[in-house]
Amino acid sequence: MPTRKEKRLPDHRPRVMILATGGTIAGSAASAAQSSYAPGQVGVDAMIEALPGMRSLARVRGEQVASVGSQDMTFAIMRRLAGRINTLLASDEINGVVVTHGTDTMEETAYFLNLTVHSKAPVVLTGAMRPFTAISADGPLNLYNAVAVAADPEAAGRGTLAVMNDRIHSAHSLTKSNTTAVETFISPINGLIGTVNYGRNEYFRHPFRRHTHQSEFSIDGVTDLPRVDILYACADMPADLIDCSVERGAKGIVVAGDGNGNMNAATIERAAQAAKKGVVIVRGSRVATGTVGRNVEIDDDHLGFIAADELNPPKARILLMLALLKNRTRRQIQKLFYTY
Ligand SMILES: NC(=O)C[C@H](N)C(=O)O
Image 1 (cartoon, protein in one colour):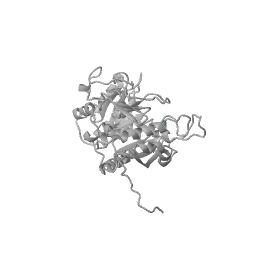
Image 2: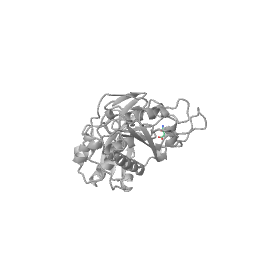
Image 3: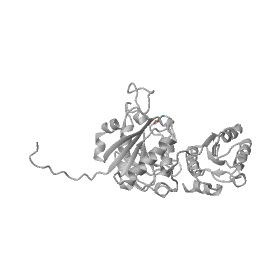
């Protein structure tokens, strides 16, 4: 027993919450050099335990929100995440949040949070391309760097971010570009937000589009999002795919068009009929880079279509689902695509 009271120094480290959802960062394989593995096997506490150096950056706590490969990510989990993050950040007890997530749909959850979290505090997604148990696993350094960004007041006000492979991406621009490589995430439209090197952060810019604390979207009390389908255009695309979506109750359709948001004449005709019935048609592109503008080869004004502008089809789908929660005109929806 100590004979005199030890004086405890106040702990000024920022407080970071890690919300874990699974993914390859929590993946496990039978051996360290094996390509087959199961995602979402390692719990958040074990991930934190394995990285004691992280404690020099922040006071870190963890919560397990889900344990899925992100190919099984759902809007129910995304809504739970957004709700938990809004509660945590409203309490002032937490300075920043890290979300560990699979890489397959990371851009979708990142963009969903970018529109539904209402705080300036940093929210940072991270993941891995190699499982936790692999030789040269990329997850531990990604998690370390993500905590460094989430703990950094300089990261605040830049919207939802993703930290992967030493790069800081905005949710708006981030996209996965390689099926297996560690260097998979790119920001092809507006470029990187910054870099992070073993916890040293450098920032180049703020995102150009509206996000988080400026967002008009809310999912408070929302239990169901309207159905929006993505249809992938190709040579001789069967036009009746549009009818199938409409019959199944789609309120919106994003066409991952060829080139500058194109689709064949038969599909345009079916899509125009769907638009007349009130289904919102958004023209995106299956091409990895570039924007989709209005009235280039397709007369959007006449046909009642929306151009996806900078958003790829999965993110265009999320913006449209949230936009359809309220009655909005086509013109208002198009404006959202120029704003977010
Ligand atoms: N690298 C990964 O995380 C891939 C995995 N399928 C996932 O998205 O959960």
